[in-house]
Length: 71
Image 1 (cartoon, rainbow, N blue to C red):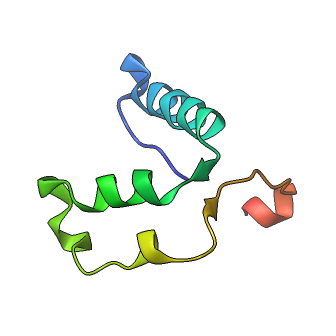
Image 2: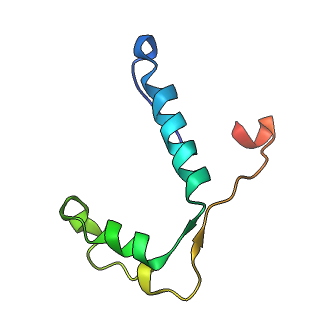
């Protein structure tokens, strides 16, 4: 993930903190969470998604990356 914002207001850093906290709190996205997100009016672009119907749940896990991986 990449975050952008005004450095003097720490926008990118604050967004990253919110995202990391959310991922730590919810590392597995169950079908209910996925479907609730898909069905929100502001996410109409996702209306045809079948992600919530998949057998396997979406799991978010950190991976270690080297400096070379990041460049």
